[in-house]
Image 1 (cartoon, rainbow, N blue to C red):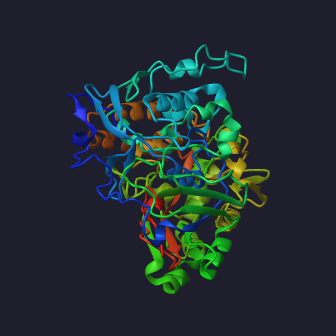
Image 2 (cartoon, helix red, strand yellow):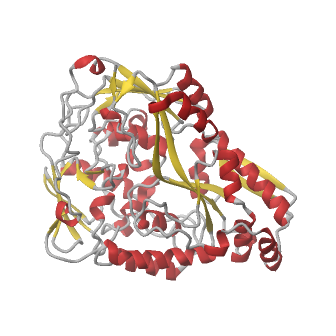
Image 3 (tube, rainbow, N blue to C red):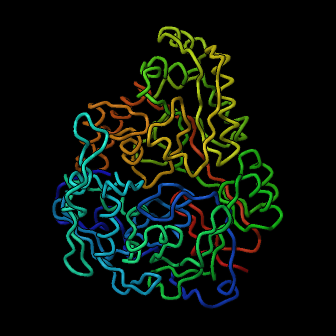
Length: 537
């Protein structure tokens, strides 16, 4: 996200698009041929929620991208395209006018209007709801009124006096005016994130029921309730008016406890698409699947975060010693078969402004220097708890390697694992219940350094880290007149975060997927699994 001033700019012109009518592919009717009459299956880890504003889980987003059309989508090249929006325009990059395409319907027949977006955004921004994506709306005017701070000496914030963002104005059914707190030229690209999806009126009459059977506006609709830890079924929505109707009759999201089990089922023909083949099986999968093995660059990153709100981790030298005691390349080779990329940057290589090694010495494996810094910082006494979720066995594998290296290189003898159920893990971190280093993973929402830096190191971060200079740099970068002008400022902010190391970069994922010979037109990319394009033989 960046912010600019200027003449009225249509998103097409702003981002030098040649077309803004969708993907540029023929829509097709999705209702002919053998593929349209059959379903296929996708391996999935259990989501936490299926309400768009209340989840940032990649597992949830995989389902939500099938159920919802956002205003904007990102194509495989990283270029924004209009989807539910007809246009996104601004005279000053602060007040934005969003035109909604006519004729769109929710799966229950309700029309998709400007009010559908306003209602969804207000609900996500309303503090007492405690929805995961609340902070994505912080740059819309009125956010502070929906999220009052607790009085001094109290842990409980007062109830907001309003539940509506003053920066949202429904002009008519097809027009939503959004007023931001400051000019922000990349506001349109953020609208591709599923947290900005619309919601129908039924979502607010029974939010709990909606969370297990959401009503969207996308090419697929729910086919029954979400069966926890078992199955989520969706079917083609025949009333879909968007540019890409589903090419299959539906998708069965089969929920697995581990990628290894899912991979075994892929080999056996019991599941048709696995988006994350276990790294240890990648070489075998490439040989076994041939052209059905799909490798793509990824914006996903793994980090090791520190609870700097705990005084034991307050010293930057201690945190740097941990970083320098970890041999990233050795772990990548052992756990991920060398397929991931060890990182010395906080942002992924496909993000504008990426630099190869801004971290320098602090991310280089140097056990001698690590021990010196560790001693200088006063060392660490007591039990070192390492936190990760139980969503994937590889998490424990690389945490085991980290633990062994910290024992060997820093002499920390008492290390224990805190393995948290996947559905509870993010809330554990958000509520600062962790008392030791923890696995932090980030799946890029949109290709911008801001999406990484402000989202993870900004206000309300999981580490409890505070640095006003960092926040000022982010604000300046966001207000820069262009992406090009913002990059040096984002890089200065990244340098500050790396210097204090409240969270260290570990490695960048390389997505490795595989599919059965039952499906074709599999078009995976860093932004979407594109389940609507898949056909069944």
